[in-house]
Length: 474
Image 1 (cartoon, helix red, strand yellow):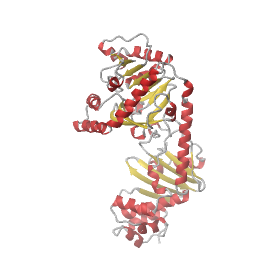
Image 2: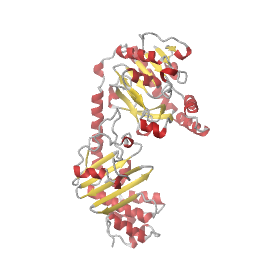
Image 3: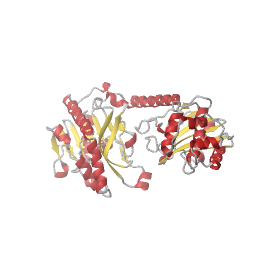
C-alpha cells in the first residue's frame, strides 16, 4: 500500500500504526511521486491548507494519480486535502459561497465532529460495517463546500456540524474521499488551532482538545475501523463488483422517502389545525400573565388573520398562521441542514403542493420579521382539519431532515401538566395543571384566572394581549 503525505501538517498519523507496512512518500520533503500507481493508495493532507498548486507544485501529479486510480478501480482513500484533490481530479468543485466569504471571511472550525451514515452507506463496501453515527476529528473552513461530481455520499454531517459539512463520498467503485481527519489526534487539533485560528485563546484551545479527549475512545474506535476496513478491502483486490453498490439516485430516493415518512409521523403527532391554533393563542396569554417583557409566545388576530409565534431566541422560531383559506405551520431552525435562507431560497420540495392562497403567508412580514423570501426549514399546512406537507428533496448531496424540536407545544401528547412544568421552570413559578387547564380549555379570561397563575400579573397588560390575540375575555 502507498501513502502520500501532501504536506507536513497532516501526516499519516495513526493510520501508519494501523497499516504499518505502507510505503510513505513525502513530496514536500523531496520524495519523487510515481508516474502511475499499481497498489492501494491513501492520500493525506490538512483540509485547512489554502496554498494550492503554487505552494504545493506536486498537487497536479497527485490529482493525476487519483484519476488513474479511479479509472483502474484501485482501492483509494483520500483524506482532508486529499479528499478535496479527489473531488477536483474527477470534475468536482471545492468552493466557498461568495456571500459567506464576504460576510464572515475565513473562519476555521477545528475539533470533534459527528457524521451519519446515509442510505448509500448501508451497502457501501468501505463503510457499511461502521456505526450509524461516527465521531471523529474535523478541521475545515466555515461553509467550504466539497462537491464531487457524480459521487455517492456514504456519510454526511450531523445537524450540529453543518458549518464545515464533513462527509465521506465515493467516486466510482473503489475511491473514497473523507473530508475530516480520522488519522488525527488531540495534539493535531492544538497545532491546527494555533496556526489556522490564532485568535483562539489558550483556554479555548484547551477546551477543544479536552472535547476531543472526552470522545477519544469513540473517535479511535471508528477511525481504526475505517483504516481496517480499507486495509481489508485492499486485500480483496483492485476491482469491486459494482452490483453490490447502491446508486446515488437510489440513495437520494431513499433519503427523500425517509423525510416524507418523518413528516407523515409528525403530522400524526400534532394537534388538529384548529386546536393547534387555539393552543398557541392560549400560550400567548399564559406568557403575558407570566411576564410583561420578552415573551416567548405571541399572538395577534385581526383582519381575518391569526399569527401565533414561538421565538426561542438565537434566531430559532416557529409559528402558525391562520386565515379563511387555511392554516400554515412553519419553523426555522438556524442549525438545520435545510437552512439555506442566506441564498434567498427555500429548501427544494419543502413547500411543494402548498395551496396557492397560502403562499403569501410564507412571505408575510408578520412571519419573517421582514418581507420577502421566507426563512423556513419545516412546513405543514391544512385547508381542513388534517395536516399536509411537501416532498423535500436532496440538495447538493445533503439529505432533508425534519427538525421539530420547537413544536412540542402543539403536539397532542402535550398535557396541561407538561405546560405547567415548562412555564413554571422557565419563569420560576410554582404552577400546577389546575392553574393552566382553564386557559388551555379556552375559558373566558378573568382577573382571578390570571392571579391564580401569578399573583403579580399585570391585568391591564394581560387583557390587552388577550384581546389582540382573539382570546375571550369575560
